[in-house]
Image (cartoon, rainbow, N blue to C red; front, side, top):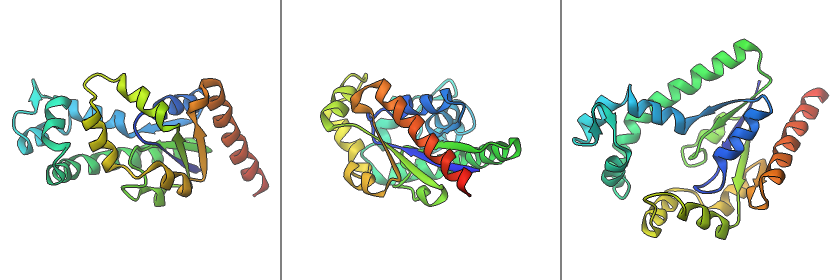
Length: 198
C-alpha cells in the first residue's frame, strides 16, 4: 500500500485537494476532522482540565482554546500532548483497516506534516500550494481571522519555499479547480505507472 502525505499551509487549498483525491476513489485520513471529533468527545475532558473554561456543555470551544494557546508555545505543547497521541491512534487504525481492505493508495491529510516529522512515515509527500496573494485573499475571508492571527499561525508553519524543496509532488491551486484536479489525476497516474513497473 502506498501512503501519500498531503500537506500545505493555511489557505493553500489542502481540504479542497483532499476532496479531489476522495472523488478519485482514494481513502483519506483527515487529521483536522479527527481533531474536531476529539474536541466533541474523547479529548474534551482532558482539555477542560488542562485549560479550564475552554469547553461549553462538554464540547471544546475552539475560539476560547485558541485564545489560550495560539501565542503561547508552552500551552500549545500541553494541548498537543493531549491531542497528538489520539490522532496518531486514529491514523494507525485507518492504515491498518485500509491495508486489510487491500487499498493500493491512501492519503494522510496532515497540516503540520513536515513540522511534526511525520513526512518520514509516508512514502511520498504532496504539497498543496498557491501564490502568497491568493493565500492571503483566501484566508482573509475566514471569520475571526486577523493579520496578527495569520502571522502567528504562519510562524508555526515551515515556509512554503522549504516545503516545495522537500515535497515529491506539488499541486498549485492558484490556477483554479480544473487545473488542480488535473494535477491530482496526474499524480495518481504516475503512482499507478510506477507500481506497474515493479
